[in-house]
Image 1 (spheres, rainbow, N blue to C red):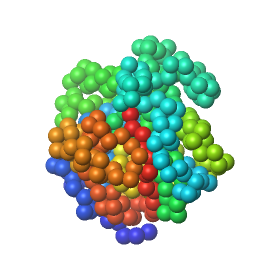
Image 2 (tube, rainbow, N blue to C red):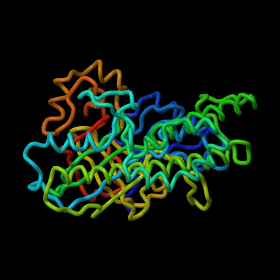
Image 3 (tube, one colour):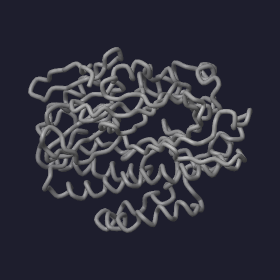
Image 4 (cartoon, one colour):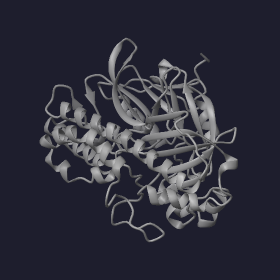
Length: 411
């Protein structure tokens, strides 16, 4: 293994922080937030910080938080199980139509995208949820329903969430569906989404329960979003059950979208092709039990990807930038983790204030995608330089494929 490229940030009355941030900016507010998390009494060994790190809610996005006997629900977040899926196809660039707009339109019709059923996209079509879910959604939901019913028995409010109708849908913000080319001209399909409305409801519910528990025990937290659930307490087991289910939902959500994406492409490209030649489906907002430094611990990856030795992962760039299929090096100091993307350098509102539609059109030249005012917050300049991010984590992963998007669908 290469020499470690991290720097150590020592924290008074807290655990150390190991940061893979050489050559990339880290805002002062994020450093303060990291220090607050490092002072929590149940942090195990150290916190690992990825090069895409930036300010989040409670804990920083781009951090790996190992804990003993406790979970911070806000560190897992409300987009539980959010992550990536990519599949290589047997198509090549020469098999694609010269005009990619029909391909993009077919994908937009096949995968609901946006905020809610009442949201309309730029073409005036209802988006966000299924009106009549197709067969792949029914089949996937059948594998999830019994466990969900058991969770709803304990938390009845979750029954009213948009769960079944969100399965196989994209959402909004930085979620996307892309058609990409790799370094050899092979066509890949890639998408980014999570547990949608039901995951948001689960996360929000348990974040509030943790805060109430902290108030009941008069805990003096540096940030109320660091409120936690202790093992053996009333809500801990219920959260573990619900968050595990939401992570299954998120993984299945990506699988269903990929099925519908492949079917949509086949309506435009008549040449027969195979897919899932090299497929990756990985979370980057989640918690699970793992073995590190001699102990079984809970590892929360808030905007980070598992990168065990030999394990494949996905590190996407922004719209118009490169993305990477990577292989983990199993670095123990990072708790076998790597970054989940490029990481924002500015807020969405700041991006909208600073850039214009013309700026966005220039930055995404050559990509068939929306180029309107509602996607300026996703302009590539609002993100860190993906090449710098990759260099900073050179001892965490190796690049297997470099992807460049040619079609991008956003909510």
